[in-house]
Amino acid sequence: MPENTDGEPGDETGGPPADPGQPSRPTGDPEAAAGRRAAPAQAAGRAAAPAQAAGRPAGGSGEGPPPGWDPKAWQAYQVRRQRAKSGAWSIVPLAWAEAARPAPAGPVPTAVLLAAAAAGLASGLFLGDGLGLGLLLAVVPAAVGAYLAARASRRRARPWSVAWVVGCTALLAVPALRDAAWPSTLALLAAVLLGALALHGSRTWPGVLLSPFGFVDSTVLGIRWAWNELRSRGSGVDRARWLPVVKAAAVALVLLVLFGTLFASADAAFADLLDGLTPEISLGDGPVRLVLFLLGAALALAAARAAAAPSRWDRIRIAPGKARSRVEWALPLIVLDLLFAGFNAVQLAVLFGGYDKVLQSTGLSYAEYARQGFWQLLWATLLTLAVIAIALRWAPRSGAGDRRFVRVVLGTLCALTLVVVASALRRMDLYVDAYGLTRLRVSVAAMELWLGLVIVLIMAAGVFGARWLPRAFAAGAAAAVLAFGLLSPDGMVAEKNAARFEQTGKLDLAYFQSLSADAVPALDRLPEPRRSCALRGINNDLSSRGEVPWYAMSLGEYRARRILRERPVTASYEACRTLGTFHSRIE
Figure 1 (cartoon, helix red, strand yellow):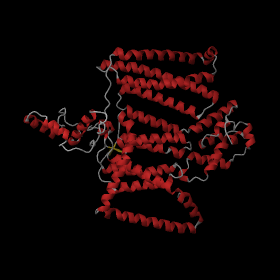
Figure 2 (tube, rainbow, N blue to C red):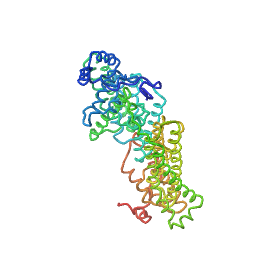
Figure 3 (cartoon, one colour):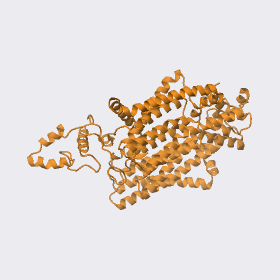
Figure 4 (cartoon, rainbow, N blue to C red):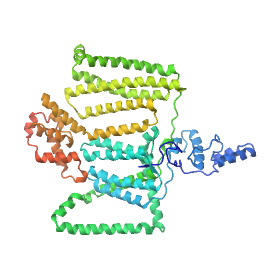
C-alpha cells in the first residue's frame, strides 16, 4: 500500500506530510484578539504582524511551524492546545488527537467508488456462508480501491508498506487453509494491524499501537467522503461520466442472467458448474447479506479514505520520564539481575544434574514439577518486559557513559530472561510428555516463544538503535501469528497425541471430539475402533454443516471431508463408550 511518509513531518525519508487538520478558526479568533489587545504598544503589534505572517500563533512562544505544517493549521493547533491545557472539561479535542488528525481528501475517483461497490457485493455474496476464499475475494477489491485512492493523492509506495501488504495478504489466507476458528481469529486481528500500518505508514510506538483504531475514524470520514462526492456528481455535469457506466453494468447483468439461465437449462453439466461456482441466495438470507454488503462497502471506503489522507499518528509525542541518577535507577535492577542469576544457576544445575535427583529430593513427579513452574515463569517473562519498559522511561541519559551503563544493566536482564524462557519451555515439554498436547498448552508455549523473540529484538535495539523496534515488533507479532496458523495447531495436537499413543498406548479420545477438521489427517492413522471414535465428533460436526460452497470451505475442511468420505466412521456408540470417548460429553 502506498505510504505518504516513512518518518517525521518533513523528513527526507518521506513525502510531504499531511495538514494536521482543517483550520477551524479564522485569524480573528476571540482569544487571539484578546491577546493582541493586551499588547502594550503599537510597536508590539507591528512586531507581532511578521510573526503571524510567518505562521506563529499570537501570544505564543514565537516559534514558527515545523516543516510541512500549514501556518494557519499550526496557529489553530496552538490555540486548541492552550485551551486543552485549561482544564479536563475543555470542549476542544486533546492535543494528540488534533495532531494526528488526517488532512482533507481530494475528490473520490470513480474507480474507487466502483471498487467499494465490488467489495460490498463480494462481501454480501461470499461471506454469508463463512470465510475461506470468500474473505480474499472480498478484500481484493477493497485493496485495489485503496491503491487507486493513494495513487490519485500522489502517495508513493515504500518498502515497509509493501511488506505490510504482503503480510496482510498472507494472514488473510489463513482462514482459507485452516478450519479451526482460533488461529483464524488471531490471523484476522494481525491482518488488521498490518493493514493499518500499510495505510497510515506509522513507524513509532504510538503509530503502531493506535493505527488499527484509525479505521473507526476512517469509516466515518470515508462514508462522508463518498456521499459528498456522489451528491456533487448527481447534481452537476459529471453525471455524464458515471451514468453510462451504471447503464452498461445493468445491461451486462441482464445479459448474464438471461443467457446464463438459457445455457443452464440446455446443458446439465453447465448447470452443475454454475451451481458450484455461484452462491445460493434465498429471501431469508437477504437481511444478513444486505448488512454484509453495507459493511464491506463501508470498510472499503474507510481503507480508501485512509490511503488518500491517513492519520498522522507519528506526530504524537510521548515525553520521556524524569531521568534518575545511576544509583537510584540501577540498584533495583541489579538486585533483580542477581535474583535472575541465582534462579538460572539452579535451572542449569537441574539441567546438567538430571531431573531424577531433584524429583527425589522434592517428592514431585515430572508433571507436577513442570506444572508447578511453567505459569510462574510465563508471568515472570511478562513482568520483565514491563520492568524494561518502565526502566527505559526513567533511565539516566546525561551522556554516552549513561547510555552504555543502561545497555549493560538491561542487556544482562534480557539475557537472563532468555534462560527463564528456555526453562519454561522445558517444563512445558515435560508436561506434554506426561499428559499430551492440548490447544491451551500449544498456545501458551507459542506465546512464550514469541516473548523470547521480543526480548531478542530489545537486545538488538540496544546494540543497533531502537528506531526500527516498533515496526520490528509488529512484524514479529504478525510473523508469529502467521506461523501459528500455517502450522495448524489442531493438526499438531492430533499428531503429537497419535505419536504418543504409538509409544505409550495412552489416548484421550474425549478430547478429540472438540477438535476441528484440521486434526483429521493425523487421527486417520489410528487403528480401529479408536480411529472412528476419535473422528466421531468431527464427523458429526461436518455432517451438521451440510453442503458448504467452495468459497466458504477451507483446505482443512476439504481434506477432512475427502478422508471421511473414503473411510467413513464405522465404530458403534457402545464400542466408543467403552473406550472412554464420551466420559466428558453428553449425548
